[in-house]
Amino acid sequence: MGPDRMQEVIRRVQNGEVEAFAELITAYAPGVRSFLSSHIRDFHAAEDLAQEVFIAVYANLDSWKPELNPTPWIYGIARHKLMSHLRRLYGPKSRINAFQAEITEELLRHSPVENVRGTERILGCIEHQPAAERSLLLARYFDGDSVQEIAARLGTTVSAISSQLYRLRHQLRACLDGKVRLI
Amino acid sequence: MTAQDLPLIDGFIDGTLTEAELQQVKERLLSDEIFRDELELALHLRGLTAAARPGPAAAFSARVLQACAEISLPAPGEASAASFEAKVLRKLPRRRPPRPAAKSWRTPLLLLAAGFLLGLSSWWLLRPPVPEELACCTNDTSGFVIRGETSLVLKNGLSLIKGDLLSVAAGHHAQLHYPDGTEIDCFPSTQLRLDSQDGAKWVELQSGAISLAVKPQPPDQPMVLSTAQSRCTVRGTQFELYANAQQTQLHVNHGKVQMNGAKSGEVLVTAGHFATATAQEMRLSVPGEALCRSPVLRAGSAPYPICVPLRGSRKLFLYVSDNNDHNFGDHAAWIMPRLSGPAGSLDLTTLPWKRAKSGNIHIPVPQCNTGLPAFPRGFASPHRYIYTHAVSLIEYDIPPGYDFFEAEGVLSVSPLARDCSLVFEVFTELPAAQAELIWKQPME
Image (tube, rainbow over all chains, first blue to last red; front, side):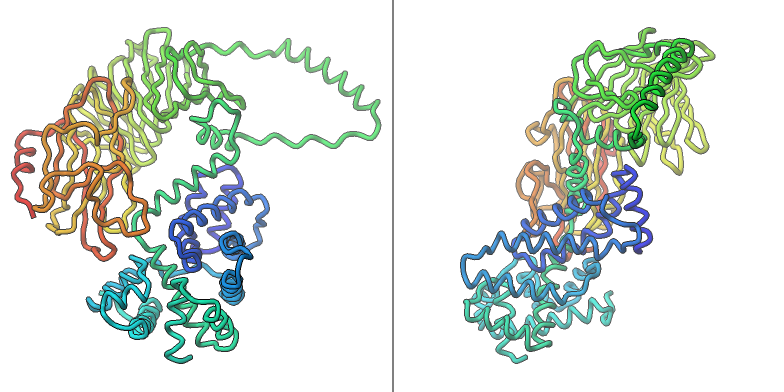
C-alpha cells in the first residue's frame, strides 16, 4: 500500500471513520511488530509496545500533516516508544545496562526508516531449508532457545552453532531478497 | 569480521554477554561495517520471525481499535457500550468554532437582543411538532440511544422516536414494543435505527440480530427492515434477522417475508426457511443447511468470527470439515464458544455435549480447554476453547433461555504446516443421513 493510499486512510480516520484505522494497522502492524521484536527479547512486551505505538499514532493523528509520508512518521513513533521502553527496562543501574542501551541506540541511528518487509515470506524461507537446518532455525527463532541451549542439546560447541546460524542467516537473507525460488 | 565475532553476535541476541563483551560489541559496531551488518541481520530475522507467527493479527488489530475507541470515552455509567458510542458520536457533524468576540460590547449586545426576539418569534411560528413516539423499551437493559447529538441510557419505559439509534450492550437483550403490539427483541451487541415513512414502520439493522413478532400491518404500510445487503417487507409474521458487514440472514418462523437484495433480486421466504443476502447474491436456504459456514481457513488465516441466532432450536451441531484435503494437521479450535440469551451467558466448554467425535486417532474426541497443540511459543493461548481435529462433529442439547451462539473458529497449526485447510459450520438441524456419514467417517 503506497503513501498516497495511507494518506487517504489517515484523512478518513481524522474525519471520524475509526474503522478505517484498521486498514492502517493491517498495513503497518507486521513491520512495526517486526521492528520492535528485533530489539526486544520478550515477545509479549514487544506486542504490548506495538499496540501502544498504534494507539499513540491514533491519538496523535491531529498532528499529522497531509504532506507527510506516514511511514517515517509511524516508525518515528515506534522508535520513540522503543527507546522509552529500553530506558525503563535497563535504567542507569549498571555498565551492562548502559552498554545495552547504547548499542541499541547506535543500531537505530543507522537503520533505514522504511516499512519492514518480509514477514509474509520468512516462514516459506525457513520451510525451504533441509530438515536439520529447519529444526535449528525453529529452535532458535520460534522456541527462543539460546545458542548455549542448542549446543548442549546437540552435543556440540557454541562456536559450531554460531557458525551454522551465520550460514543460515545469509541463506535466509538471499531467500528474502527473492534469490531463492520457493515452491 | 572474524569467526570469533559470531558467538558475540549470538550472545548479544540472547542477552548473555558480560560487560567486557558488550564493550567489545560496541567497539566492533563502530569500526566494522560487516559486523554491524551481521548483527543487524540477526536482529532483523528475530523480528521477522516474531511478526510472522500466524494467528494474532486480527486480535491485535481488534485490541488496538478497542483501545482507540476508548480514547474519547463519554460520560461514566455508559461504559459497557462506550466504544460504539464513541465511534458514533465521532461521526456526527462537528460544531462550528465560535466566532471571535467583537471589540465593542454594545453592538453584539444589541444584535444579541434583536436575535433573541427574532428567534423567539420564529420558534413560536415555526416550532416543530413534538416527535411522535414510535416504540418503547420495555425491559431493564444496558445500552444507549443516540438522539441527534445527545446520548440517552436505554432503559425500561424510554420512549423511542424517529431517527433514534439504539446500541444494546454485549450480554444484554432489549425488548421494544410498538403501540400496535409489534415486538422486537434486540440481541446482545445489536445496533439499529428506528424510523417511519408515511406511517410505515422502518428499522435499519446495522449489526447484530433481532427477533420480531409483527402484528398485521395496514396493506399499504408494510413494515420494512433494511440492512446493508437487503430489505425485508413484512405484513405480519414472526422472524429473526441477523446482519453483519458481510451478510444478512433472515429466518422465518411463521408466515412469510419478502426479502429484496440491496442491488437486485428478491426471494419470498416462508415459514421454516431462511435466506442469506450478501453484496453479491441472495440465496434461499432450506432446513438442514448450515446456519453459518466459514470460508476455507488455511495456516495463517485470521480467526473466523461466528455469531448465529439459534431460531428457537434446542439443538446445536458444531462441525469442522477438512475441506476434503485429508491432511493430518487439521487441528481446529472453537475459541470462546458461548451461548447467550435471556438466561445470560453460558460458556459452552462447561456444558457436556450429547455426542462428539474428532477425526484423528490420537484425538478421538474433542477436548475442552486443553490440548491445543501448536500455538507457537510466545502466543497467548485462549483460556476457553474446544480443541478438535477435522473431521469433527459435536452435538449439544441447548438448555432453555439461550438463543444465540458465538465463537471464533481457528486452524491451529505449526508454522510449517502450510497445506492444512478447514471449514467451520454451525447447524441447528442436521439431516440424520448426513450426521451418520460424519459419525462413521474413519479417523486419520
